[in-house]
Amino acid sequence: MTSTQPDYAAPPTRAELARLSPFAWRETVRLDLSGLTIEFKDLPPDLAARLRSRYHPFTVDATSDTPAAMRVQILDAAREQFLQPRGEDRSYRLSTVPEAGGLRMVAHGFAGWFALPGGEGVLALCAGSFDPRERALENYLRACVAWLALDRGGFLLHSASIVLDDGRAFLFFGASGAGKSTLAAMNDEGRVVSDDLTLVLPDTMGRLEVVGAPFRGTYTQGDAVVGRYPLHSAYRLRQDARTFVTPTVAAVVLAELLANLTFVVDQVGRVPGLAEQLQSRLLSFPTYDLHLRKQPGFWRAIEEFHAANR
Image (tube, rainbow, N blue to C red; front, side):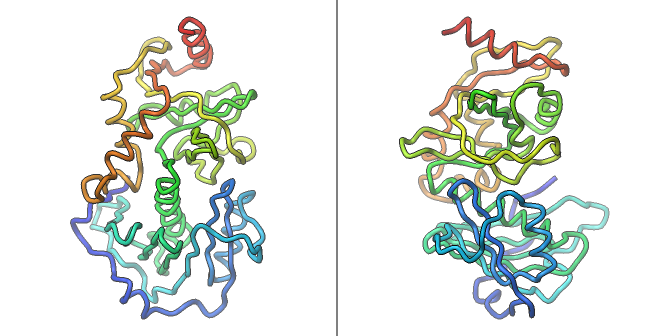
């Protein structure tokens, strides 16, 4: 469980982070998410090696001359953690402040910022075990990708996603416990992109595509999905005694989609024009309710629904 409400600690300022130093031994790791490139520089070698293993096959040659969408300098926080765990409460806490077209952040094991204009960021990593460096970096990366996607007309949605053999991509979203991981686990067609977070970006014509990214969640079967696939439709998961699809009410679905825009939804009302941007793109693709019984066969219900409503 992650809280993103900034009611307990303000993130360090850029000036405060600028006083920190890089690690003594430094390497660079670059990730390419089908054209969305993020570079981490000045990494300690052990962390760089773990990232190359964790994010394979999204890592690319760090010496490439291709400009990165975001270049992030890694610094040594020189402390165990920025935020202390609250006694028996072991939930993960992240405080964010919108700034300069990006975010300033602090969590247990890291503090940092990134700005979309200029494509620059800073990430200071702690040494504590509550929020290990690899996890801290991934949480920063997720926030960074969420805002880069937003800047390019897309979004990062808390959802499961599956690509069928014909190339069509489908999203499955809902509140915590709605069945995203269960649906991914019992999928018997196509390939699961993620059971947790799905990156969606527009193509050159403005049509939305599901983009392979290293945020697979708990799903570990098969190889990671790489590439871009046209988004066919999205489904709000609703547990039921049988499996079937029904039309949705746009206003209801919009509210739930907004609630699942991780790292972004907390800034609605704090960033001018953000609500209007999100509403426009979240209503640009068809959405339905998938009433789901926890057993295989949901693809048949989806195909039968669309066949009957052509």
